[in-house]
Amino acid sequence: MAAFKNQFLDLMDSARSICDQSDQSQWNGEGWSPAIIIGHLVEVDKQVWMVRFELMRSALHDGAPIPQLAWWEPDGIETALKYVDSTLDEVKASFLASREDMLNYLSQLSSSELLASAVHQIFGEITIKTMVEIILNHDREHCETLKSHSV
Image 1: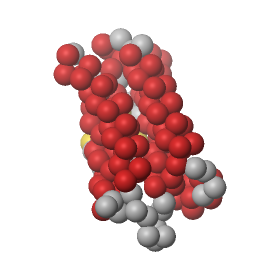
Image 2: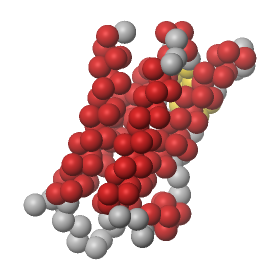
Image 3: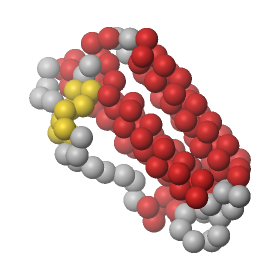
Image 4: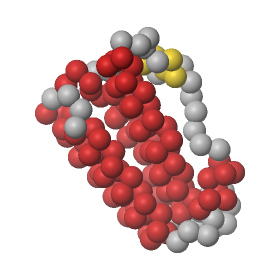
């Protein structure tokens, strides 16, 4: 359980690292701006990770079948349009607030709820606990994108 508590901290550290990296980014106008990349992470936190945590937890409590999950992310065009006029500071604040909400949710789960499972189309059998590493990997991908545009 101690290792998982460290992953909790890693979720927040990862968000802070992404925010810090976005400050150093020199976006060349191609692809998503740093604000849209972070907006994407906000939307994924809210529409994918949190929804799936609750789906898995609810299935466990209701005795429902293990959820079957497909790969899904919020629509990129809708995300870009939603965040195109947002400042970097605005989206960074939203992202950090989103992660705080996630940490608050996860910290309230019991040991058995952290083991609530689903079967993911790409990752196979996962639990809420193992999803944290999937989130961190997703963060790393986007942090690398920001780094590739940094001075």
